[in-house]
Length: 321
Image 1: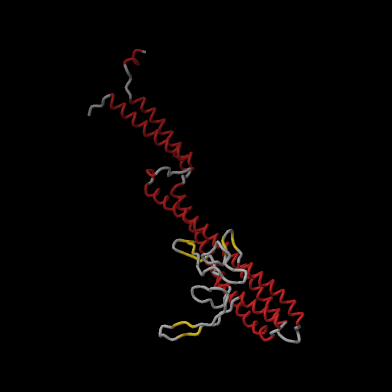
Image 2: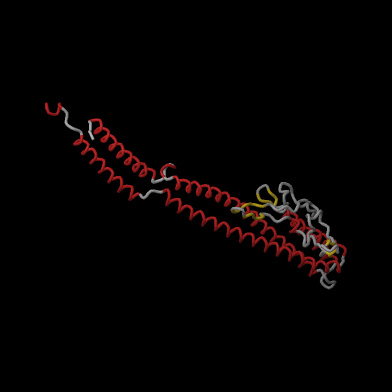
C-alpha cells in the first residue's frame, strides 16, 4: 500500500484529535466531579439517574403531605385531650352535687356557672383550627363546625392525603365522631341524643345504642343543677363516662395513625438514602482515578506529538538549512 504525505497528515491529525478529546473529557469530569454529564456518556445509567430523581421529587412531596397530616393529627389529639379534661371536671362536679348531703341550692347555682364556662370552653375547642382550616368540620374546613348552642354544622368527611406511593391516610377526625358516642351514619345533625334502629340483612331491626352528645350533656347537667334535679345529676355520671371513653378511644385511633405516619416517613427516608447512594455510584466521578487518567493521557498526548514529528518526512527546506 502506498503511503502518501496526506495519509501521514491524516494519521497525525486523528491521533492528536483523539488525545485532545480524551483530555477534555477528563478535565470536564474533574471540574464537575461527575462522570455522567450527558446522556450519551451512559444511556442506561442516565435513565436510572433520572428515574431516581423523579422518585426523590415524589418522596419530597410525600414528606410534605406527612408533615401536614402530622400537624393536623397532633392538634386534634391535643384538642381531644382538653375535651377529656372538661368531661372529667364535669364528672367531678356531678359527683360532688349528686346527693342532698353534699349539695344545696347555693352550691348548685355556683357550680352551674362553672358548667357554663366548661360548655363555652368545649365549643371553643370544637372550633379550633390549624392555619385557616377547622379541625373537626370534616370537609367543611372554612366555617366553624360547632355553633354557639353546641350544634354540629360540619360533616363526616375524611380528608385523605397520600403519604407514600398508593398509601393514603386520613388527616382529620370529624366532629361527629368526637362529640358523640354513637353518631348515626351520615353524621349528626344538631346535638340531639337519639335511640334508633338499623335494618339487618334479614329485614329485622337492631336497636342502636343511645347516642350521648358532649354539648347536649353539659346543657342537661346545667339544667339539672339549676332545677335541683339530683336524679338528673346522678344520671349524667354514666353518660360522662361514655363520653370520656369515646374520647380516649379516639385518641388511641389518632395515635395509631401517627405511628403509621412515622413508620412510612422513616421508610421514605431510607429509600431516599438508598437512591442517593446508587445515584452517586452511577453519576459521581472517582477523582483519584480521574486525576490518574488525566496524567496518563497527558503523557500519551505528549508522546503522540513527539512521534508525529518523526512521522512527517523532512521537506526540501530542511535540507537547505
